[in-house]
View 1: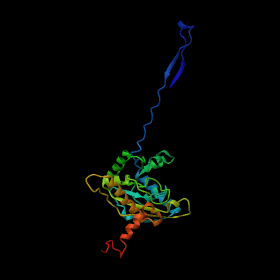
View 2: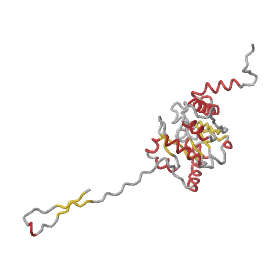
View 3: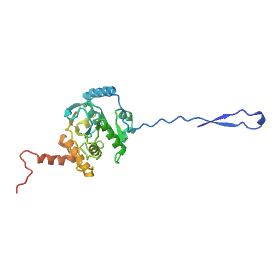
View 4: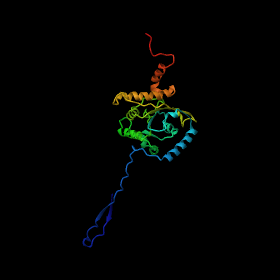
Length: 266
């Protein structure tokens, strides 16, 4: 940026027009860009105050039932893998866990009006529809630090309000790190803020450790691990919420129904 300054004409050049001196203004240094892949370390006291405030708010607006909370380890790294019906799933699933949950959230959240809150709570972005290696590295680093990582295997909210096909990211991280995965089923949350005190239920399943069949992780390992977790989530949901996994859950249930034998008579 420049500024024009009229200089006083010298006696020797009284007939000449005044000279214009260009004075350069130094531009302000650009503010350093925040690395969104470095989750904000929310002060524990502030996080706990916010958690208890939300517990009170949730108790007012919904009737919440929580089961299997003892399946969430008190310490050590783990992955929470919930189904996703509404945006309120994000805070509700973490409220009753006395440890901070760091979420892998879709990149679009970090460009909206609530971007500051998403980052304040410690989330980091992931680019959907592509192999976001930086997000995978961040997820693995958070687990190495002994934190809880929250990943919605469906990738986004289910438009049909039933369980959709799971994506590979959750299983890939679990197979690479060897940390336990806690499947989580939530339903009724799609009615929150739409009905007066709807009944919302959360079930935390038993932890499962996913392992590859061989020395290297294959695509088949990832697909089978994804289906394993998604079927566990589906089995904890009411039948009308099981979506694309309803058939698999029904098949498994029929195979282990008392009085039935899987062996055919010859």
